[in-house]
Each structure stands twice: as C-alpha cells, then as structure tokens.
Length: 221
Image 1 (cartoon, one colour):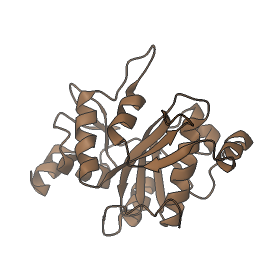
Image 2 (cartoon, one colour):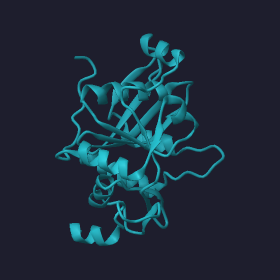
Image 3 (cartoon, one colour):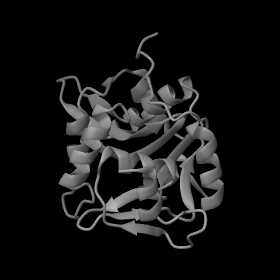
Image 4 (cartoon, one colour):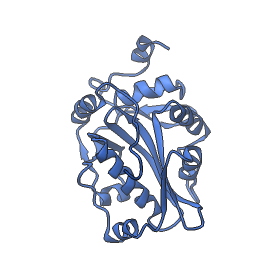
C-alpha cells in the first residue's frame, strides 16, 4: 500500500465533520500505523469501521488519579509486573466479556499481534503470587504518543496496578500524549478528560516527532 492509497481511503479528520472516517480495509501494520498517526483507530470488524472522535478523551500523563488502595498495592509489590512478555494473552484477556459482545475480535488480535512484532504495540502484564496473569494493559506507541487500547483485571485492581506502572514508564520516557479515545466510568475516575478533535490532532502531531518505536526503560534502573 502507498501513502496515496491511504490518503484516498481515509477521510481527512481535520476537514471531515463525522466521527466515522472510513469503512473496510484491513488490519495491516501499514494501515494501522497510518491511522494512528492521523488520529484514527478501528472500532469494529466485519466490516472494519475507522473513527476519529470529536471530542477525544486523553490523560494528562502527570495527573492520573490512582486510589490509595491501588497505590498501596503498588508499594506492597503485591504483583509482579512485566512488559511485553505475553502480549497475545493480554489481548485475549482484554477481549473476554462475560455478558456483552467484544470489539476485540480475532482480526484485531491478529493485526495488533503483528504490530507488536514490529515494535509498535506493547503490553503490561500483572502476575499474582502464583505467577498467574491477573491483569494487564495494551496499546500502541509511536514517538512520544501512546494510545491505550484496553485493560483487564481478573483480581481486584490488577489492571490499574498495570496502568500505574505503564504511566510510570511513559513519564520516564517523556511521553507527551496518552489517548484513551472515549471517556468511560473507569477512565473518568482516573482523571481522563475530553478535548476538541482539532486540539487533539495538534497535540498528536507534536507528540509523534520522528515516529520511532518506544524502547521501554528497564524495570529496575
């Protein structure tokens, strides 16, 4: 695929007034990277629907509100934390819904697994004392921009503990923008807020920089 092909496929979010900017295509690494660099993300499969929401929900990386309970669990080292040890399993766990349908369908998992192999998608894993995966987060990192895709918890607060360590690493790497796409109860409680789409796109452009993959700092340095 060429840049021109993607420019023709996706509506320009800066001038297009609707949230939905394209339908169809695939989950190729090239298409996903083009989309994220232009503020676009997929939200369904069969067909794939691509969105650039207005307003857009983001986190201020230095002002995330973790509860005292979560902070206590972090200080107690209740869980073992790893990065990129089990990306595929984290995605599969995030896709689990007891009652509702999931948007993280097999095409998503296959596409983002390839993105991970190329160094653009990352996971945080949270393991309990029995070395069982009980929480995690995954997302896409380009330059100093991170798109948080999904989080899961099979034990209380495990996902938030993973998110705490993710923010810690992003701040250490001087990230500038954390995209959480749309507000929900959990992200709102953590301090996410909405900004206009054009403001988001301006921030995204600055954060992308030279669009290099993220090299995660060591856990203990």
